[in-house]
Image 1: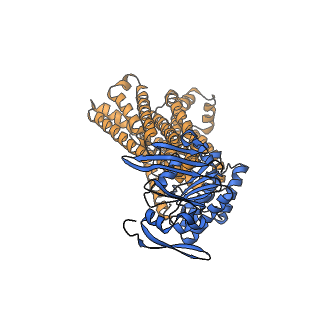
Image 2: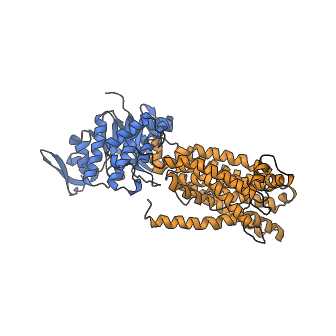
Image 3: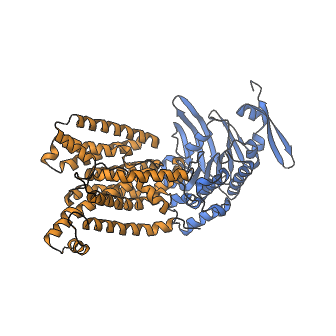
Length: 263
Length: 337
């Protein structure tokens, strides 16, 4: 396999006396859509943020394209990895096309001053997220599903080889969840490497090429979703008693309740 | 793809620049001694009689220029501060620089420096502004987020405000107290071109630094985390805005005393014309702030009154209703966010 685009190596993150990440290692290769799973507070967001240099590591390393993230300038980092954070506040009622154009920030592009290359990247992102009809809308008036698509488009417009998306489908209805995951899967199929934090296990099985399950800052399992996400592992990771139901079209997870103690 | 509000901003900047020139010209022609427009124009370009020359060059032009510079500096600082803090209520004084500059000037009055050496007042304000700016810039590198920076600014404001009150409380005589109060009300009366030469470069430097943050402020629209992801160096942006606002606002306080409301109102006035992108509001806010304060000063001069009407008072009297109108319109439009 080629070199990983993003890599966490034995990452340790401490907050006060608590270890949030306990030597977590994680590699992301081109063409992968990796789902980062785990219960609330397991360190998923911290792992994602440490890869971007937003959380300092106590030990271990965070590498982007082989270089330590701290050694890269903000622009150089942004050109290698785009980021869609979990909380997506919008301070001012800007137009949708302005928000997407901000995706070209690392290349000097902005509304009114987009180069041909910038414009092509923006148009491609608009197309991928099906936003043509919304370009002149005020972003603060969009529905949750529409806004989520705009934020994904903004991240895609950077045309970085890697993307870290923290819960891009949170608070969306099933159709919009599906749409967003479909967009990410298509990007990965075209060669991008995407790390996405997901809570919906069924969605992860449907779209991700690989899943990494973490708990208490440690990796529980990593591999193809159908192999990794067994009822045993789900009991261990989430403390749930869950079973897969399968038919010809795919499988869905049914949660029966909390797992029996001592699992 | 639609160009959106960019079209407006392209014609707005030249329009505001022309309005600035017209406002300064108007300020030169209005006053106690009526002067025909032709005479003003002649005096400005070195013609006309000696009296007109003196009135224009020594009294009216420096006063109008000072008002424009202060208004522009406050408008620009307000727009930058609102962009950095992503808060429509932010104003140039929010980090405590204005009050600290005022404290510097009041110290100069208290100890009688300004009585024996007139520029001491301005120098005191500049020293106050620069010390506060250095402190805020230092803090900007260490805080985790903008809230941390605001808290330090509020603390600094309160401390400088308390010391300022203390000095007024201990003022040796009513005349000194009167000087302090009068200066704190804000005015550009009797400013000379050499006063402008002292504060002008500091303000200009601050303005340049603020203009460098233009794109970063746009990126911050999507929040600090997303802006980091876009490739913005958050610490650098924070430091630049803190230093730029400190120099521009501090220089303004040194030149004209404390003048409120221009900084907070102007960005709201230009937003309907240039759109909400905070980076794009910077230059129009500066120009509009300049025009606004020159006109406010003309008003202050023309309203007949026994005492001199202070520019700071007039600016607040004009600014506060505009602010209320903006607030009312904002809530009438429903939630803006």
